[in-house]
Length: 486
RNA sequence: CGGGAUGUAGCUCAGCUUGGUAGAGCGCGUCGUUUGGGACGACGAAGUCGCAGGUUCAAGUCCUGUCAUCCCGACCA
Image (cartoon, rainbow, N blue to C red):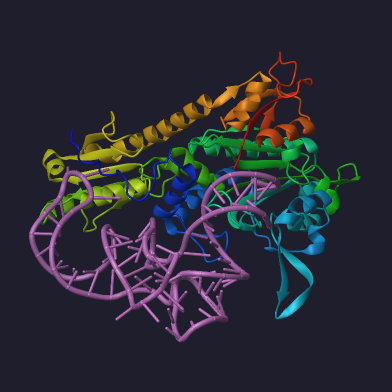
């Protein structure tokens, strides 16, 4: 070629492989998902980022409704004495709770916690609402903000205030509560895979990683490009712990009085952080079509007046809008290269180019965001008449391709290990998901964490044939994924 | 919350050692030529140097405190 230095492909962000953390933050800001707020550890969710949250919200909400849940809203503030009723729960959350101690110019007689989660308020209300087995189950969800006083924050992954949904249900039997918890875990897994295109391992958390006050905690765990795991959703069986602490009782059919079995489950905007890290590349965001605020952007390539090109682009735009697609016509007075870079940074899955050449040939040029420039199938011409029908097809190919790529990475970075020293080495090296036969003992887990800072992500039943724990040699009781985590 | 680093224009940074009138590139605005991968020319706007004290005739520069951000740990969605 030449000795002229190559123009950097992207001016705004460092290469993803060079420093994932720096890349991640630059993308969050440059793609205008978030801005740092004038409050420590908090972000402003900007319109484009909020639109991503709305994609998640509408998809999950539809699934919640389909499975019989209803939305409601409970207060942000929780009286101190109320919060303290469930011992493990309050102990677990104490370090992260923010307190309101003043109001109306006076010191409050009782401090109010800003909700770190809502089991307590909701449980209190359930105690009032539930009298009889006929009142059960209660299946409620709320979409709200949460405050947890974190030491170290990053956009989406960990902020003082964050958005999530929390479902809270009450059931007459343990079995029904257990089924609810599995159902919601499965909804999270399915959403993550089919919408966010993020493959996950679903399973049960160890006792050490369990939600404060729960009897069983289940999670979906994704793997980030740096080999660290990210918990993307959780579903908890609370047993009768909260029912006992908050007096959620009901009369049974045979006239006895029992405590209800409750559950809770949540997914936060952290899921957005996961998909940003999993799919993004050196040019910025790469959004799976189902999560993308814009499925396609039309970039007219205008020469001179270019009235005919613009008019044609508008006709394409109108057609696509009428077809129900999330599409934008970029008619800004900028050079095409700027627009390309702009929408690539924002991760729009499909770019539709329409210039004089296209117009003459009566085609629109499709460019896929998920493929490298010049790659096979990255760019192709589609006749005018087929554009509207071709887009959904192409988007679905992109969606599948992103998931397949992420799944290949997850599998490639999941190691089934049977040798102790190799296991410890891989843990330390942040090598990904390490799948071992495990004893399930807290001491074993603590020792691994102390030596390597890896923890159990989640566990599942033995497959058969395993005899001893890879880490400590005690009898094996589970299979577990270990990894360092976010 | 411990260890380290950094706060100067919207962004990336220089200026600080050795105190003396606030700088560059990119971006932004207007006009013109342009427009199939981040154009070019002319003109222009833009910073109480994170904040608060102190030292000094004089502080972006020196001192103290404080806030925020980033990295590494401990803790967690």
